[in-house]
Image (cartoon, rainbow, N blue to C red; front, side):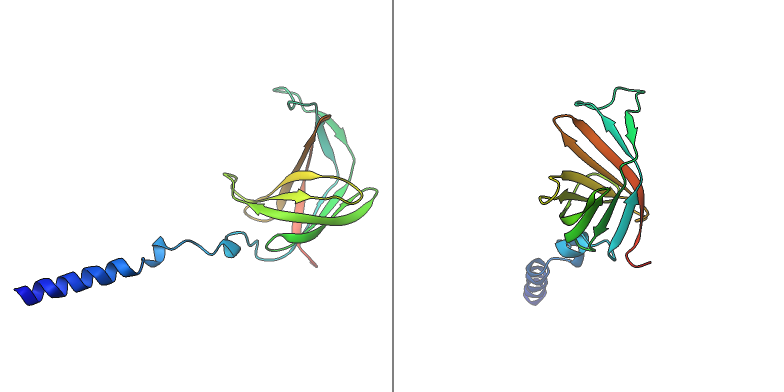
Length: 147
């Protein structure tokens, strides 16, 4: 009987020493991975005044083309707008969004601090940049870089 109790106690201590695989935190680097670098394009932006567009209001549409080169795990990429390209930094974020999200920052030709969301299927994106004069929102499509 005592032998069984000692064996049971030893098994309990072993189980407590190492957490189950499902209890371990996921590798944060993998949690932010897209799977491959993306190239994204949008051909128009919607501009809403500060505070956003009122219900039922669509905002002003402009044909201001942008493209993004988004690295697989965030980091250094590119942002191009009709007037030229510049380096951009993509900082992955954990949000309640269904897709991959990041903060895109530029500080060369432009000064953007925009929110990027890429859909789960990696085919669509939304980029929102807000400022004192309102919010610009681009929506467009993404493809694997080089395809």
